[in-house]
Amino acid sequence: MTDAQALVKTLDFQLDIQSDNESLLRDATLESRSVYNETIRLAKQGVDWNVIPDRVADDADLVKNTTQRVVSKALGAMENYYEYDDFGQPSHTKDGAYPLRANYEEGYNLSLTDDGDVAFRISSKPYKHVKGVLEGDDAHLDILKTALTSDEWKIGTAKALFHDDTAELHINVTNTEKTVRDKQDSRTVVGVDVNENNVALAALSEDGVEDTLVIDFPEVKFERHRYFTMRKRVQNAGKDSIHDTLEGREERFVRDRLHKVSRHIVEWSQRFEEPCIVFEDLKEMRDSIDYGTRMNRRLHHLPFRALQFYTSYKASFEGIPTAWINPEYTSQRCPMCGHTERANRNKKRFKCRSCSHQDHSDRGASVNIAVKGVKKLNWNVPALNSLPQVRKVRRQASGAVDAPTVTHDTATGHLVDGVVGVSD
Image 1 (cartoon, rainbow, N blue to C red):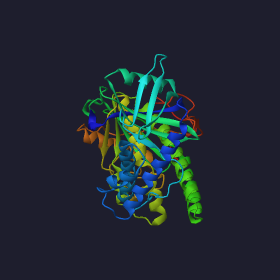
Image 2 (cartoon, rainbow, N blue to C red):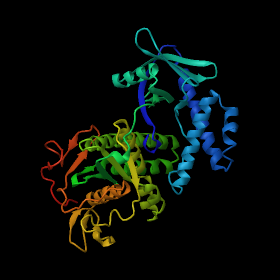
Image 3 (tube, one colour):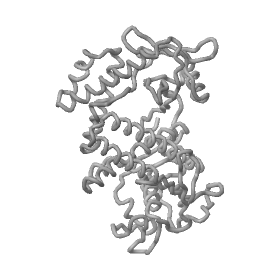
């Protein structure tokens, strides 16, 4: 499996609870919240992280495995907080329910009924179970039923939660046999440049640049700033419960948009022969950012890695490999002559100080990423005598395309009406 990447898919279901004890599940999610809050509190106090799991488990009224999963999630949030230079400190005063996390056949069980339904049993608390059947999307149910009867799939961890007062179970399943094509067997490299409000794509083969595309998603930046402003106001007013609610809404909003954009990236990549999707390794870049408090918050919290991850695992399910390159100079280098200079780029406009080549700066960066990907695969870099005209689309929440738009098939060689040449 390329880069040891597991083919994991999350299946979402609603719970038709038939044991007349939904309150047990709700109480357990509140206890889960207490475990999470206590873990974060102890970590903030400087308690040894190796000691925290046992210390929290002693007082938790949950199944041991479930407690371990929640503690692990909380410590992971703290680790992420420290990794990104103290931005986004986790709250130890979460209000409301928190997902109940469990391993398969330890904290929860599934089985097929004679009626063809999938029955569940969740260990909400020690010796107390919530039972019923799963309801949800037919495609997700089909995958889960296959996973219950086939050695090709492995059922993993799950989380039980309440969304809009509806009980849900989100289950991770892994395909153990599906293979990802070796990167070296690729015929096209798709460079992906992830930015604050768009993602630029460039498909490069041995014949040159096959096609490019810029996908705008300005609503992500807008909504994240809007939610940040609201959270800051309610936090200053001491309303921590509202703060946590807003944080959850923001996370769901951003996650939904990123899933749609990542799906578009994979679908576009499939138009080309044997693609390999190449990303910048942005971890190092983000660690080096220091542009002041306001810009640091924006840049460190941008969902670069989340979009890359969603795209990578969706690509894996299609057998498409992914690779990572050093991001150094990808935004400053001229893709035509190779001249590299900071002055080449001015916001969204790129003009080479050496050969006068002009381009959409993000599109140019995606071409440079593709070129680096080609070099990483030890191919010969093709001569780039010309580039396709810039095409842009805008993705909305529904997945529809909004203006500026594609009015016909976006396969190689077609252009977007009204969006030609360099664009702001």
